Image (cartoon, rainbow, N blue to C red):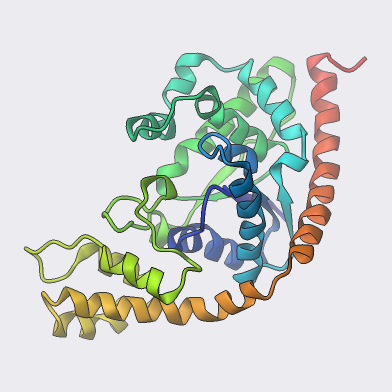
Length: 311
């Protein structure tokens, strides 16, 4: 069985873009692959500097994973910071790539353009992500179309290491779900916590309603494109056609319908999430991280021997 790895940053409340772009596809793929699901807490440090908030967010991400139906007995749910080999391997990769190479990263340039501090961690982010992926001999990584470059960076790191020290890492492939590659936010751009344009996945109905009602609409069109694009994630175009045909130009009607459909999806997951205790979260992370450490330790023994630091 091929290995699949994905992860989410505990940098804030998850939104429906996370669900349709990562969690739902992962759930559907979990029966076909040996799955690893990472809480990417060290990645979150590039933008989140509040330790209390980060600690709460880590637990909440695990609750979110469990609430959507991910079974920790069938997928390894682990915390990035509990596996020290991630940062160790990231450093080794950083010594193999150039500054101009890292400067080409779309995500770095985009975040800096948005006013996010250009710290060194954000700059070296692609090599930590490469370590996350390559450490476990990952075969496939589900990503959005706009994240394809992350896998290109991982493959480049693998190729450079293999050329310098001998065949060690397999080059992973991206798994792109075309229908949910990019989930639009309330401003029409990609939904992202860093852009403040999200619809909360486990928010209250009032919070979801407020976010949906803020979705930008084009007064020149009959159908609000961003509203419809999100709605298509919940229902088929055939199901939506009568609603949008009968309410051309009536943006509030389509937004009200979207709110109800999001609620129908979220309510059972929200109830399950509220029932998950702190003790359950800790157990899942401790057990999953132990499994991840076992796999990572084997790989790093080989890496250390090949680069020459093992005596």
